[in-house]
Image 1 (spheres, each protein chain N blue to C red):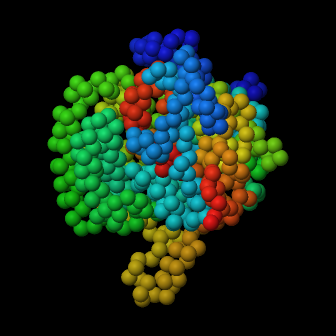
Image 2: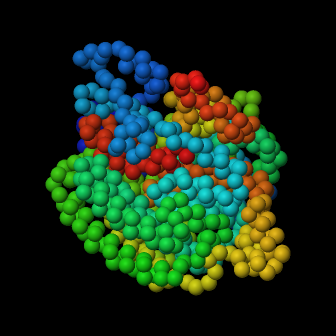
Image 3: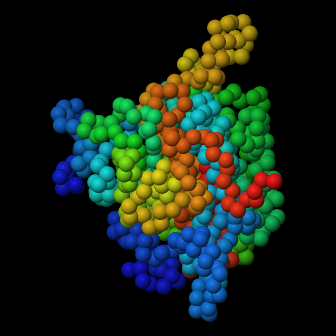
Length: 183
Length: 444
């Protein structure tokens, strides 16, 4: 992936400043948009995620600060995706930080509902362990290559993934392990 | 690499870590963290099964610590693998305080949002409110007036004071300096009294809101803050006498729970833990938000990355916060304490009595809320524990489609197994304390 297009983040930014971008902007092969918070947002394919994060690591994005899931079930027609990226139900959002350039970068990966898996970044950033477990627990997105993909916030024997949009609030009685039957 | 015994590892890393080039060291730290296996990966069912068997002489023992252990800061539970009194692997088990606040946040309007997030990190609630409000304002594309910015800074620093004073208290208590606990709580209470006067509540303030702050500073606030700023520094000197120079205190903390910069970066750690390794990274200075680029302060860093450095950093960050508050008092501008934007701000209370339109306007803002344009934003602030980020996805309605808080305690907890490996069980308490986790934020 990295050798397909050698544009670094810097060059992409200066290209944009020049104002005559004909080709869609790409960083390490991933399409680029700009968020309302001023961050550069990359939209790689699911399979290209690990290579992209590795290439960005070589560019100075050493710290992975956050991994979060989003369920777009009830908001499918979002308009902030670049052309060529098909919206899917789930999205994995990764925030990276470059301490040398003092800026953040966001990666959004589309994860389809019929195959909710995503490659794990654990090999590059061991600190994503807890965050990926959280996304697995609350959204049911499985991370391939994660060393211990278990529930982290909900009890081990819980069924369902609470932050999914089709998981109703307050519709399920609280589950207590080994609680006595009602009198 | 990585097959050295745990004891040698600590010495080697502290003495040579900084001499390698960042890239290579980072790579090796990542490799080391993966291979050494300080993290115990064992499900509760497996652990229960292991507990049934009688461990032989040459076997390790799995021990459970918490969730009701007094030194686990609430409801943290640790599964420890012990060899004699030496800790080998650790697994932090969390979730005992999980109340689904991110799910709740999706059902509250942007104006109700701070009420929800303020209950996450209950020792420094204003920072969660600040992160949420800044993210919402980013999505709305509005700028709050200067006075609101400076009030937010004042409140942040006062809250940092109270949070670090709480750390002084609990850290002392965990290590047996019980009188320190009383002093720390006493000084914290003085700070909370000012927060109460300004916001109306000691904790869970709901004071910083999208568009500004809830109310202007009350009469006499300046005298109260000045009185506090006169009161705290001599008390900090007393802490120095009581603890910093004391041989027992130093013996108990120095060289305990060592972590390197490379390990911290690989684990996503921020805040005092990262700074204790000698790495000067503070969002207030490096990615200034509010008006932190207009005040003068030092980023306090350590040298060895041990528990003592983390204690000393927090003690001196209190002094830096006092320095910042003095400058805020000098520079506090006059003007509006919230943005005068009809879409976001309700009309003043007095107008409601005389104008029907104002009443309807007020009613609509507090029932329907204001609509936020479609999009997504991430904004982070430097909380007393590290980077506190808020990620909001808006679908154009008056409630966040998805609200995610990146809690520093949640991520920093992952350093525990690595800091505990090869240490004594008694030091585990000192290490948990030095991470200063707030479980409300870990579990959300």
